[in-house]
Length: 560
Image (cartoon, rainbow, N blue to C red; front, side):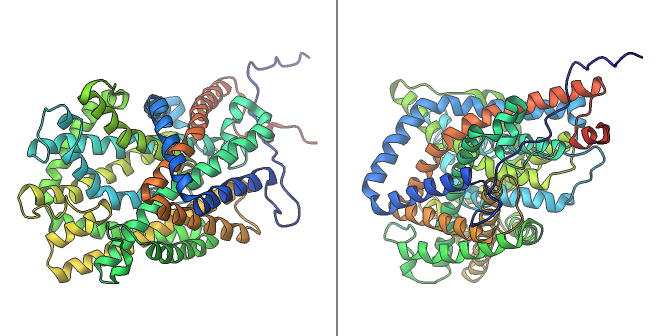
C-alpha cells in the first residue's frame, strides 16, 4: 500500500496565538498592544492640552510635508483597493467563497446590515457634507479653476456632483470593504483572532504573533481613534450649531460661528457618555437598535427634502451625476494634478484639500469600519459582501447628496436663498437650507430632527469605535471584563476631540488624522495583497481537495 502523494499546497494557518494577560487589570488583553496604545494616545492628548501653540505649529508643518510627499501614494492606493474588491467579487470562483464556513448563514438581516453599514461608516459626515460639499464644489472645482465653467452657475453643478460622488462613492466604501474582507475572511474561515494583524497572516504566518503583529495592531488603534476623532469633531460642531439654531443660547458659538469651548465640553460629555453606555450593551443590542433608528430618521428627513424641497431637480442631478461619475470614475481616480503656474498650483491645492484629505480619512477610518463590517458580515459570500458594502451605501450617499445638496443649490440658483446658505459655515449649511426652505416653526422642528439624528449617528459611530478598539486590544475577543477599558477609551476620545477642537478647530483634527493615517496606509496596502493571496490559495486548495476552512481542517484531522 503506497502513501498518498503530498498535495501541492498545504491547508491554511488556523491558529495565531496572541499572548494575553491571565489576571489583573489587563486580564484578557494583550499588554503589548493595549499599554503602548494608551500611552501614545495619552501623550497626544497631553501635548495638545499643555503645549497648544507648539502642537499647532508642529501639526501644520508636518501636514504640509506629508501631503506634498504622499499625495500620489494615497490616490493610487485607493484606486488599487477599489480594483481589488471588484476583481474578487466579479471572478465567479472567488465571488462564491463565503466569509465563514460553507453552510453558515448571516447573523443580521439585510435591512439591519445596511443600516449598520451606513450608520457606522458615513452617517455623520453625510449630514455635514450633504450640503457642504456640493456647495463648495459649486463655488470652486477643477473645471472652474481651468476656466471652463463659471463659479456658482448652472454649468458648475455637473462637475460639482462628479467630484462629490467621487469622494463619497466607491473609493470610500471600497477602502472599508477591502479592510473588512481581509480581516473577516481569515477570522471566520480560519478561526484567527478578529484583529488587524490576522489579515496579514496569509503573507507572514506565525510572525504576526510577535512584535510586528503588536506594532500593526497599535498602528490600527491609533489610526482608528484619529479617524473617529474627525467624524466626532464634525458632528460636535454641527450638533452645537443645531442647538444654537434651536435657541439654546449665544454661549454655544464664538464670534466666528464655531463652537465655543464650553459648548464643546458640554456636547462631548453628553455624546461620549451616551456612546459609552451604548458600547457597554454590545453590538447586538445598543448599536443595532440605534442603527435602525438612524435609518428611519434619515429616511424621514430625506422624504421631506424629496417632497418639500427641490425633489425633481435633485433626482435630475442624481441621474446626470451618476452618469458623469461612472463615466469619469477611472480617469478621476487616477488623476494626480501637477503644480506649475497659477492654474496648476490651484489644481494641486484643491486636490490636497479635498481628494487627498478624503482618501486619508477613509484609510484612517478603515480599521474601525472594516472590523465593524467584518463583525456584522459573517456568513455572506464575497460577492454579496462586496456589492452590498460598496454599491448600496454609495447609492444612498448619492441620493442624499443629490436631494439635500441639490435643494440648497437650487435655492441659490433661483435667488431664493440670496447667499444665506453659501455664506454660512459648513456646520450650519444644512440648518440654513431648512431655514430658507421652510417657515420658521417647521424649520425649527426639522432642525430638531437633524440634531436628534446627529446625536444617534454620533453615538453609533463612537460606541462602535470603542468596541473595535477594545477588540483589537483584547486580541480579537470582544466579550468579558472589558467595561473599565471601554470607559477609558470613551474618555480618551472625548479628551482628544475636545482638546483638538479647542486647540485649532476641526482643521487641527483633520491634520492630526492625515498624519496618523499614513502608517496605516502601508498596512492597508499589504492587507490587499494578503487577501488576494488568501483567496487565490483557497481556490487552489479546493482544486486539489485540500480543506480551506478551520472547520474542514479539524474534520479531516485524525482522532487523537
